[in-house]
Length: 422
Image (tube, rainbow, N blue to C red; front, top):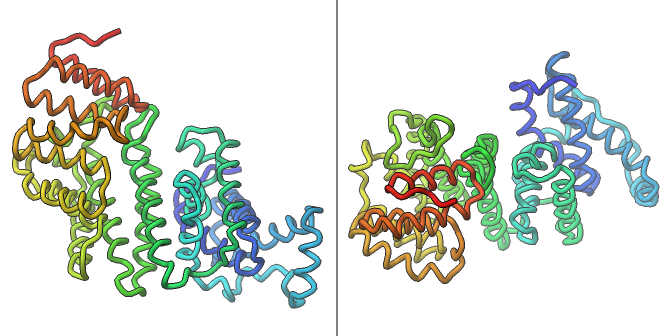
């Protein structure tokens, strides 16, 4: 098999959920359709770089996946009865593979339906992320497994269980009704947010970033924003999420130094920031804020924009950031938001104010989380309590699974003049 061609890979990713949608609508079996499309994608990756991209790539994929699906149905004894029942009530041309040059039902774009289906609230976040990356992102099970550092077999089981839960729920392949759309959209946004976060700040491993995940999250968020434009006010939070991703990812080129060592925001070379992404994110946020009441993703994007607008760390408008975190905490209470508000309070009112806000978090969900210890260490260092700061830096280093972060935190303790422990 040929190595993936960048142009072909970029073409296939947005087509994958559309083709799954065509087959799911035709056969009523999301699980089998998704498997068939994955095989068609592999065929395309093997053939198109050498033979050229077909005139109608989507119809080519529909034809090949359709053929694969028929083979699956006819080749599995457990599905023989379903085949006979479907065949009995299907038109004569149902089992015929459609011509590759016909647009027919392949003209529709089911990406939005696929996003809603893959991010069903009945799924755990981990399962929804895996299913979204495979069914909508077009990633293979092996690619997703590598991204999250689990064996391919383990990831395959996770995806399989997710599809089984969707099948058991009896959810039809269609857009959710208006009354349930808001809840389902919240799940979609949350899953894309989690994918981006894992890509921008990997929870473990050798690298600080997993660029393929953050890029895929941005691509999917851009697709979602485009598809939701037809819904009244439906794209405000989608625009906010996309803006947040762009404004945050714009700093990625400056987040690591030689050897992949993390560089704190205050010490980053802002000349390396992606100004084009910042401009796009700011424009998206401005347009969304003008459409009505702001949601949590828009508030987070506004915080990111304030950081990005500062020419230097010293020029950062911390009072505005503190006010925005206060609004976000009231709107969407979350321990991590409270932690960030404490840091902002320290920048405005001094480290003692921030440490006082961190104290209640020690007995909550962040207990044992490295970010709580890292934030407290930073504020203790600001306050001049270096001995206590070193203890918290060491504690944070021992709790993180990210090797770059562990190295940074250990080095931070060493720079305070106390040698690291064994």
